[in-house]
Amino acid sequence: MMGFGNMGFEFLAFKAMLMILLLFFATVVGSNEGYVSVIGDPGMKSPSVRIALEAWNFCNEVGFEAPNMGSPREADCADLYCPLIRDHLDGSLNGSRSKCEVHQKVKESDNKLRTGDPFPIDDYKTYTNPDLYAVEKELYLGSLCELHDSGEPWQFWMIMLKNGNFDTNTTLCPENGRKVSPIITGRKFPCFGVGCMNQPLVYHNYSRLVSSGEDHVMSSLTGGFYGSYDLDANLSNGVGNKSYFSVIWEKNLSSGSWIISNKLTTSSKYPWLMLYLRSDATKGFNGGYHYEGRGIMRKLPESPNFKVKLTLNVKQGGGPNSQFYLLDIGSCWKNNGEPCDGAVLTDVTRYSEMIINPATTSWCRPDNLVSCPPYHISIDGERIYRNNTDKFPYSAYHLYCSPGNAKYLEKPYDICDPYSNPQAQELVQILPHPEWAVHGYPARKGEGWIGDPRMWELDVGSLSSRLYFYQDPGTKPAKRVWTSLNVGTEIYVSREGETAEWSVSDFDVVVPTGY
Ligand SMILES: *[C@@H]1O[C@H](CO)[C@@H](O)[C@H](O)[C@H]1NC(C)=O
Ligand SMILES: *[C@@H]1O[C@H](CO)[C@@H](O)[C@H](O)[C@H]1NC(C)=O
Ligand SMILES: *[C@@H]1O[C@H](CO)[C@@H](O)[C@H](O)[C@H]1NC(C)=O
Ligand SMILES: *[C@@H]1O[C@H](CO)[C@@H](O)[C@H](O)[C@H]1NC(C)=O
Ligand SMILES: *[C@@H]1O[C@H](CO)[C@@H](O)[C@H](O)[C@H]1NC(C)=O
Ligand SMILES: *[C@@H]1O[C@H](CO)[C@@H](O)[C@H](O)[C@H]1NC(C)=O
Ligand SMILES: *[C@@H]1O[C@H](CO)[C@@H](O)[C@H](O)[C@H]1NC(C)=O
Image (cartoon, rainbow, N blue to C red; front, side, top):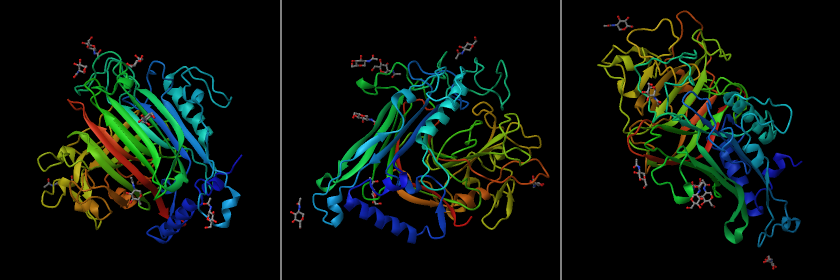
């Protein structure tokens, strides 16, 4: 079997190879100095495709599989194999071509596996519960995609799709991790009727070879996933007024990065949808999940010592309720500061999200302290209480809400939605503001939005160490280790079909050398 390290240097013809090498050196001596990447695909420069897809119901589970779709975990893992043509190694670059091939690591029969199907190898358990089967399928697909190029193994980028419909007549979702029946709540959730929590139709354009550039000497891969939540959609007749999503990957031949282009459209039956590109942990629990998962982060970043780089180009916003996240970071720790262990009654998912849609307003206001964290930590480390109306930066926050299993909350407080995660959750949603701009985030609404594509270098580590997260009084502060770093949008309940469209490239997560 061909080692991945070799392939990295064989994937393009000679000319392109030189260019990639030059770029590589340019980055090393550039702003990366003193930092190393902790992800398997630094800057998205890998010639190989490693992309998986997961679809979640309202509480990040499966519930029921969509008809004929199998368990909602798929992967596209393809290696570009280009044996060098020796004749061209003398340096004459004219007419140099190599015959490249695509080597698929995941077969259609793997992607089609559905609950109850035995796995082709014995190491994975065949569950009849769709929630448990999906977890096992992710681990199985991960084993097919895993690369051991250097250091710790890694598997794939993860595309996450989530349906915000919630049928409170079902027992599919627990309340703060606790099974309850029936669900009695004053909260309103979208649901058109029985079956509204369905999984999507997912179609897959397997990675294929494309040649481009002068004389078609540059070879690379392209492919995509697409589909709809509307089970009666026939996409060969166009999208019409159905929900839709697509994710397409292709190489930027001048930078060598993947360009991941995303599109998400809501419909009247599916008015609340999410689509993220996730950089997840290669092992352990991912943010928002309580089972072993697979991903791309070989080493987990910990506050305050890490940065995230990415280029984001938002082409369509997705309407006023599109909570576009220039990073949603997710982790899990208990209210006593201990790391999570899968016990859903005491584990708490912690999220922080910077929303860059300029239409998003601040719910945290002097006259609505319930949506503010108890205090803000200023740039120089001062605690500013939310009742300090002269100094508290209300407009730096969209909203804060508390975990439903916290015992010592300061009044006034709002409990986060107790149903939309497998366990209790805490949310700190922030907005562009000079308070965060010191860490490389947008300072003002509109920055990085439509028509303003940017390459960001976000000091996520510093910012996340300044956020308030609930802990029981007197307990040792939790280690803020982040298992998921996501970019994408959550189009929150929208009356009309709304469309968001964006691309992500150059994504990297870096930590100080030797850290
Ligand atoms: C490549 O360039 C060399 C020297 O410039 C020339 O002799 C040769 O014919 C060229 N080969 C092709 C295939 O164009
Ligand atoms: C839930 O049950 C109530 C009472 O039977 C019914 O009115 C409602 O339509 C049901 N909701 C869904 C989504 O089926
Ligand atoms: C899938 O392939 C078809 C046919 O080549 C193309 O028209 C479509 O744009 C592709 N879609 C995605 C999401 O890759
Ligand atoms: C979708 O529409 C195409 C073109 O009208 C038709 O050939 C095909 O049978 C339809 N597929 C389904 C599943 O209805
Ligand atoms: C969706 O489109 C179909 C066919 O064009 C139309 O009959 C239907 O009324 C539309 N539904 C909505 C909610 O707009
Ligand atoms: C490709 O990369 C170059 C160099 O970084 C950049 O200027 C260009 O905008 C990128 N193209 C696309 C389509 O992202
Ligand atoms: C503001 O809040 C802090 C912390 O909750 C409290 O100690 C203080 O008394 C409050 N000040 C006023 C003026 O309400």
